[in-house]
Length: 429
Image 1 (tube, rainbow, N blue to C red):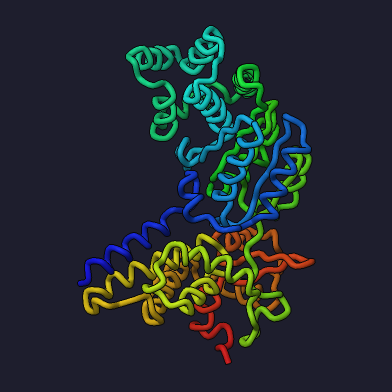
Image 2: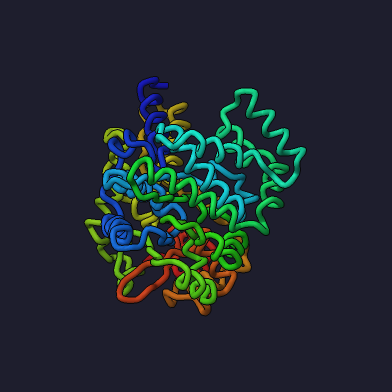
């Protein structure tokens, strides 16, 4: 096996793991111009909105929201806002997220960042806030927290670790504040006010990865508790799955509670009218944009330009799917080095990678949804865009939403391939 080739494929694989791009060095090395108009909308909304406004940011899972939000947060820091950007997945166990621990996490992240950046908050105010974090409804649990804190443990690491790993702590927080959400909101405002007095900067909180929650969980959070989530008097950007905003009653609730819902669209390769024509030419600028994502990560001698282009088209325009396919190609190519030390990512390697991902889709799909998928393919729309089955397909990236003057839908290219192999769609002429 050629060690150098293996090392470079390994590095390419690792480069493709760097999603989302969060750290400045990663953004500098790998970011391409993506979602420029959407980024401008986010920044404009902050500029024109009130200091206590709330935004919803949505789009397909894996379409680049996290990377765009990281860039947005950095741009807002440069505009002299005090920005706290965090992932709910890094803060709270994802299977147990609710409106109470979201608000608790906001308070925790605000004071944690202020402490880390050595914001000169008055010591009495800071100590009072730190003491508040150790108080729960159960005196026994409060005494336990105070004992751990007094032992010299970093309080913010301690509490974040408990939010992530301890069911009992999350339950204690829920019991303590479920009927006292207004107290959580007041503490957020108190921390934000202390930061604003010390820094002369307005506060902006950006919470990522709420869109990765199960649909039933995220619907409950936003449908039943939107007033709680919007109660703090600071700017907050929440993320939400695109499938959720297809539910009309929930959409009406959101629109009445937030200043704006901003969508990051999937990159479109074809206009609807030619999307299924075998000889249709894709939109060159969009292909080139996503092609540059791969070219920055995979050395040119390891994959021919035409193979990279095919990978782009097979992604359906979803960044996460492009990255997933790229990683699978690197993995298959590394395996191929065992028999062929000069192996590169060629048509055979791409075919194996596509097969692997197609099987992943097929295992979790089930045959009961085939008819609905065929209908979407034929009509570019489902019979009912609000049905639970369709929303699950949208959430799982089996179906992708595109925009022209009207919204339209199409299948993920690997799902189209899957249905053709099952003879549910006509073969390519």
